[in-house]
Length: 442
Image (cartoon, rainbow, N blue to C red; front, side, top):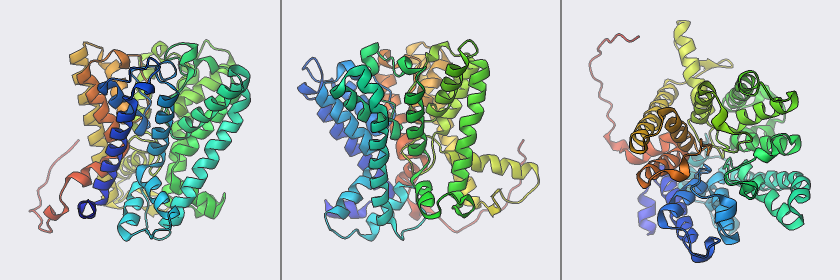
């Protein structure tokens, strides 16, 4: 076994680690005492739910609050924590705590897992990530507890606070509000500012990226000292929250009171980029609003975070590259720094892969299930972006359509480049160059 692992690349270790966590979670959810009825979940339902939890997506085929027992809910929140922090992050942290020396390969795998840039200090950064994750989740639970205790009682209120704090921070979208109505998510709290603000803060902090945390720790609020990746992630994330919120405010929530209108607009803008909670009925959105949410879901969070999707930096690099073409410049640039051509190519590859997968998946589901294409695009965009928002079709999908969503969730969580590197042989690369050929585009 040891020799087999040593032969694996970092990318292969990451994708196998997530697969192992999903399989273990599936087996646990099939146990008789994992469900309320004492029968255990069928394999297909358990696999779908375990994949959704480990890939911090939030799509479900059964209402979480009413279908799963206490044991089942504990399995789910554990899988969410593992998926949010990353299988490799937790493994390296446990290895370090045990007093064993972390090997060079383990450090290299950790760097790739969190989209890091250097091996130096990676073990210390891992410890920092674990500590801050626990701090933010516990603080979030503490802030949510007054509202939830008042509504659900002391014991259930505390448990609900912790569950939703972890789910929000890990951008998972799982909730226990089915006791108010099946699949109701946070609609009962649409006009509750405190709950909305706390959950939005947790979602943003979890989705901004671990390297941004490290920059804030080292450089405090001196933005100019931050690494380029942190600057781009922060600015792009801010724009992707504010601009869609303006659209939602004016065009989707025009009939709501001003306070509720502002709150729900911001919440939907934040949650659409991988969190998966919803505070209003999304089926009431216009087609333009639904399409905008699909675009936000595809972008997702930032690299090295609890979020999925193409990532904010991917979008930023593509837009910067388009701008440099418009201005007849040789290179894309941010904050006085040039973006390497390799990064631009990687961003274009990721975009192409995501668009092809989510469109093809939607077309197949639309044909198999006889559903409108836009509805299916929303579902597949939610899956590959590891968001968890749905227009209500997930529980009624057939096994083949569910299998497509499982694959999309898995691909969306482990990352596009990780999958590409894990399945290609670097030894096939050659330094030989073909003769130059001219081609007109556009």
